[in-house]
Amino acid sequence: PGIVIPFHSPSPDEADRQGAEFTGSTVTTQMFWDSDLGKTIETAAYSLYRRKNPELEKKIDAVIDMYGKLQQEDGYLSSWYQRIQPGKRWTNLRDCHELYCAGHLIEGAVAYYQATGKRKLLDIMCRYADHIASVLGPEPGKKKGYCGHEEIELALVKLARVTGERKYMELARYFIDQRGQQPHYFDEEARARGADPKAYHFKTYEYSQSHIPVREQHKVVGHAVRAMYLYSGMADIATEYGDDTLRSALDLLWDDLTTKSLYITGGLGPSAHNEGFTSDYDLPNESAYAETCAAVGLVFWASRMLGMGPNARYADMMERALYNGSISGLSLDGSLFFYENPLESRGKHNRWKWHRCPCCPPNIGRMVASIGSYFYSLADDALAIHLYGDSTARFDISGVPVGVTQTSRYPWDGAVEIALEPQAPSQG
Figure 1 (spheres, helix red, strand yellow):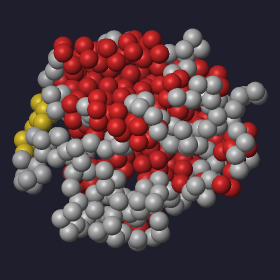
Figure 2 (tube, helix red, strand yellow; figure 1 turned 180 degrees about the horizontal axis):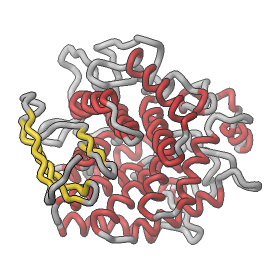
Figure 3 (cartoon, rainbow, N blue to C red; figure 1 turned 120 degrees about the vertical axis):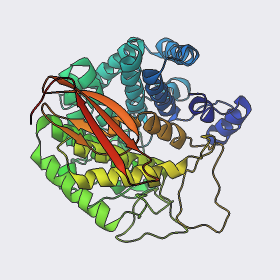
């Protein structure tokens, strides 16, 4: 936490300058900055789960208090819309990240509750999720929309699992099922605000993976981070509902990505124009975009595919993206980061201290801080090991407490010693 929190907190002067560049004013916000605070809270929570840090916890509690004061009576919560575009909420789901920001705040709330037992942010986000469900959904009178930047789907699954409230799982499934349906919501939404859908900057809804319904998608397209978050949410819903149609689509998408659109590092998305995919085998080295967040997203997706059952191809890809495509985005001391990760440079590509779009630092932070959660999967009577590394863990397997110790210098050395220590005689 002594490195993670400061390295994605710019100085006030720097924040003022960046805010002015983006908004044309001195207001120090961007439409997606709630998401970065959500990821920061999540990062801090994973750190607090491992060891107490009263000073860090106090800082996070202050941020949570701020959100509690900001939340409106009906549960709505968006610093951008409440401060910059009041009165325009839910008018541009395609571009303006409302649900994306909500998703990251939900993830932060779930992690903070699990780490500290404090419910304040969790209750705030439950109220917001209830508000979202009152506005969006399949029922008559509700908007039939979904977010242009996927994230809310996987976050609602987490919220449902930690609260036991199935309504959040149903809302997540709705967002998955509704995506790409006709008549297209983004067209209707644009017309409602007096805009021409044909004037959309990216021309095609492939950018947001909403060009066709998700079960008909067999090729990875568009913005790479959005794609990874969508596929993560699809995998969660496939697992929760035993949905073989989603699983079949995910298998085809996985094969397409890993055989035609992936760098050897686990980086993905070669183009800066759409921060994402272009054509098959278009994988240039020097101009590679390969955003850090996209590789982090691949780690998330692979881990959720493993949630449907152990499979080495998912674990191996998770390892590749973890050790290469994502960690390359962070300097050894945690103070500098790459947004893009080209595979070749003439010496002019250097890590940033900060960036006007600072999504990557807290994304790397939360992944690194939660690294232990990717090592294992547990069933009633079985344990699967997905990653290697010097570590200890404890599980209940068939009612028997079992300690697992890995002794290794991995990845610097391929030798791994695994010791299992059941606290009672066991036979399997």
